[in-house]
Length: 210
Image (cartoon, rainbow, N blue to C red):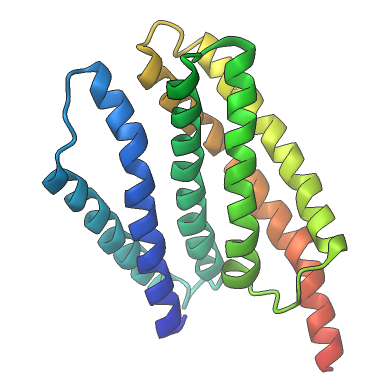
């Protein structure tokens, strides 16, 4: 890892904290909790520091197991995608007043697409560093596996919403459902992006060099 990687992960951590304020505020509003400016600043800065420390630890571990380097970057980007996902989901449910049923399924699919579009660029140019220009074939491969991940993510979120989270307050239920669904698609996406989507671009780059 380079100095640039640590600067980037600090920015990622900052964005994570910033996007996280929206779902926190939504949940807090239902429980009479006020998100003050000092607390908001502490959350944003705390996330930036935590991301930097976490990547430093994974950098040490990567000396024994190199996969930790990519996994650490993927985890940072994945966390950013998660809070972006939740922010969009909270915004849609808050603006429309719908937090269950078919509408919730649709909102979750939209929020996941927003997050995975963000994911494409971060993972391509930072996590996996394919070094190749954006191409139609690569984007179609990414889109295909993202669609599979989106269906898995939205289905798990909807299932959790009507089972485990059925009796919880709507704001809390929305976010718990969203978080659990992320776990279901996280490893799936990492495996597919690393071994299929961006691996092909990396192989092409290596072949052109040789």
